[in-house]
Image (tube, rainbow, N blue to C red; front, side, top):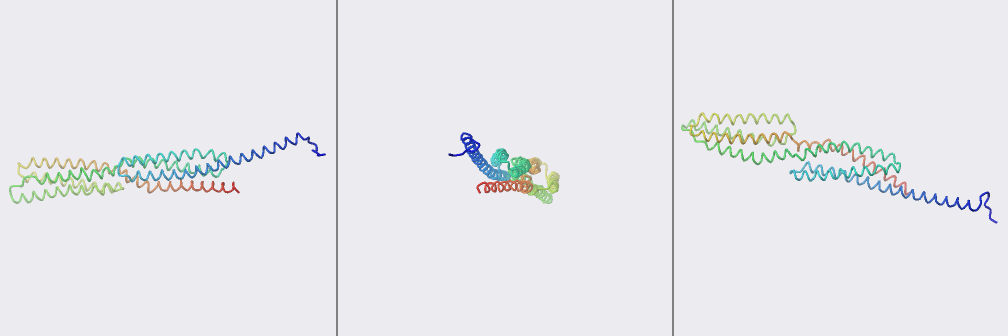
Length: 297
């Protein structure tokens, strides 16, 4: 006859059922944790992908040569940034449930670094969409060039002086005025490309001197040419005023320097912050991959 010791057969059955249920519960919990770990790995991988997408789109926005292209790339950058924030928000509770303190620390480290990165990137993108250097360049190579040509045509059309000596002097003054306008025009390109404020100021001083030379030449022409030439001198002065007004627009846009500044920030501080963010994400991926290896042993 089988002995059950001090327990009856019913109690032994209950113990067996409880033991069996405990094993099943452990198995279910293990499976749940493995699913959480798999999802954590997926989110960590997508975090890095979306972070790189955001950075690449931001860089393309800085390099774009039209407002439309800049805005399109800014939209891509913002979409990827939203995905980064969403992935990070979904990953943290998973790591908390798994009680992965090291991984939580690495995610918090990334989140803090990404906050600094995102604030800087937002400033860069705001600068990039202004495109002031690109606008200044187009204005310089388009309307400003046309205005300079119009001034040259206008001042060359003044009536010649009556005497040979005055005619030679008038020709020299016309050449001086034209050369001064062309110098201003030529100095616009280095001004647009210049990142340093002091260097821009030095260029502007040369431009002011050249404008004074052009106006001085026109004033002297009025003393050399006959009264019949005055209407054409007035027209030449108006053409110079038109050129100078456009020139001032170029300088104002160039002084904003948004393309130059955004590019400098992208190649400097943003790159450093991006490297720090990527370092945290890769460390997080590596830590999670080791958890996966130990869980399947």
